[in-house]
Amino acid sequence: MRTLFLSIFALLCCALFTIPAGAADWPDAPISLIVCYTPGGATDFQARIVSMPAGGEKYFGQPIVIVNKPGAGGMTGWNWMIERGGMDGYTMTAYNMPHLAAQSIVNKAKFTVESFEPLANWGADPAVLIVPADSPITSVKEYVDYAKANPAKLTVNGAGLYVGHHIAALQLEQAAGVKLTYIPEKGGTDAFQNVYAGTVMSGFNNLADAYRGKERVRILAIADLNRHEFLPDVPTFKELGYDIDDTSVNYRGFAFAKGVPQNIIDKAAAIVPAMFTDPMVTAKMKESGSPVKVLNREEAKKMFASQKEKLEKLLSKPAK
Image 1: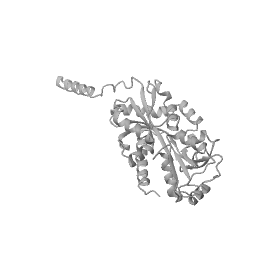
Image 2: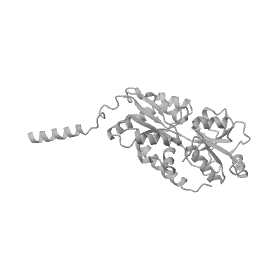
Image 3: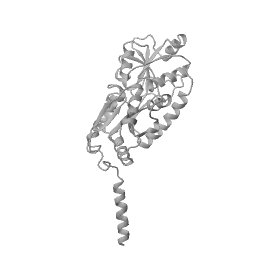
């Protein structure tokens, strides 16, 4: 009996000593959230809303502090996460799919989709095609007709290279058989302002940003499978006869870099979806026209794999 007791005691000691330092009482300090885009854009704006309840005792009991690291369509911040983000659970990132997958497919990024551990998804923000409010182009048909008559002369901007907006533009080129001139901007805010000001002829932007600024631009179509409750009168490209699916939809959520202890991942993955469905969060998201789509960790992992597969097919096609 004494031998059995000592054996059980030894096993318990081993289990205790294998718990990573700080994991048992994690978090006991604020958590940094790396947002790989400029302040004021849709990802940054929504990240600030969904992280607001973090300090509550039923959530993390610690605040989430936003740290902006913009550049290269998100690649600058995600590279930093892999190189310097740390594995102690005190640094998360706001992922944005398809950006995260596309950057690792077309560029020499220091990460792939598999470099991250998604915790939960808070939203799915479709790309919409917009033109200045006073543009002579009033429909997608007129847009495509102009593009066919003037190859490469129709300018369309977005929040960067190989972000959801760029992917929507590539899909439109392939679906309509046209050549556009894509202009990458420093972020979604700059992209929207340049369309509004008439600096460019058109743009793909987030539904959320277009919804908040709908009095200043004309919204022609949505790059998604269905119409959206915030813009019920705006058709999808599919409705209009263009084979454009939901590949460019911006799925957004929280993730760790791979290597964070599993018990911290599990604890965070249990907290984050509940935080995203907090009544204060859902009310503010709806008020701002920000689409909500909450996915738990397993659902987010499946979304990562599915979007990566679709993007690999799209981005392997030769440019027109």
